[in-house]
Length: 476
Image (tube, rainbow, N blue to C red; front, side):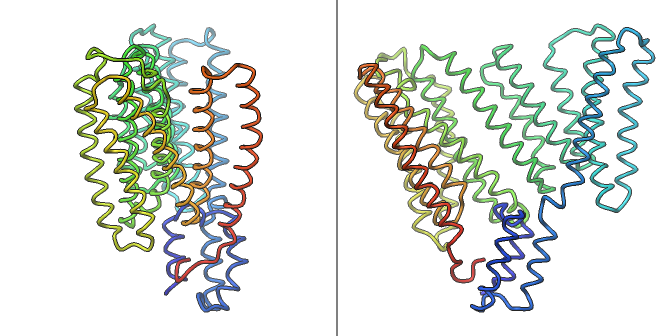
């Protein structure tokens, strides 16, 4: 058992993110003396551990970059306001000189700062690269105004995002990648809602282009932004499809299943990332966003609206062939990834937890497969609805249990949040039409007060227990 070596390895890799916070540093200072007494850590290793963790606390390392980025945002805002106030007074030549001169001055200053070796200069270099990317986007829109260029206006936003992508690739700039992903999501939202692009697949292609620099440089913040962008794109797409397919309950149901399968595939890919030392710092980010996406999709499958309120029937309401083909392909991919994970974790420390999770996943996959072949009439669909609802609560309870077993407050908190969401949606979705309105609101108020108090008390006990548990064996 080598607690010291394992702790340093996790600190270098970033672990679950807890080893890079000041809170963990304080907790570590309290825990290390007892670990020394039990022989888990040597007395000589205690100060080395504290020094190593203190040197990697993210708040200290990132302070110069944070202040530099704030300055860049203020500077970029000032430039835009300057043009807004003096637009008519400036000639076209003056406008072009200021626009391109400011952008290239930012990039040249960033190159000079990157040539230096100190950390502060490097932070300001990335801030200047971000400023150049902001000015690049401003130049696109202002030049279109100067020369009265018209066209499909989301293309200008896409070009701006590609500028951020180019800076991320060429200069290895994480802030530029983050900005590019945010702008890319904005572009996709314009195409989906303003131009009614039902399935905006070009977003997925452009999004994938950001992955190589993120993975090669192990950018945690950019990875979180990428997962958030994908989650927002998925929600926007589902909402648009839900509105567009309001008269086709089977297609709407199949879309929710498809998003669930994609989320599960990403979650399993996040588990597999733990097998690669280089990708390990990003695993918790991928898994957490995938868990949220999977639970949101599964929650949608527990709504009566997704099942057409059990009134739809006839072949005209069967799921389209394209959606069925995608679901079958996604099922195949998820099953393959699940088999790989099951084989790799067969001899893990907690095989029962993994096996129970894979069993729940297998039950949901079987239910999805069954829902594809069921005849479109009321009774089988009601059985599918009840099955999805029961499996949803089983998954939420399993998530809370896994979070407690692994000492992960995120899983515990996410489990409680989705449990409450599920109860509330079930109450409003099913009981609204079955109860008198006054009884409905009285019962809802009592349920919220009593259930909220009980769940919050239990959540706090579990999270508090995570901080008080002693490490077992040689795990740090």
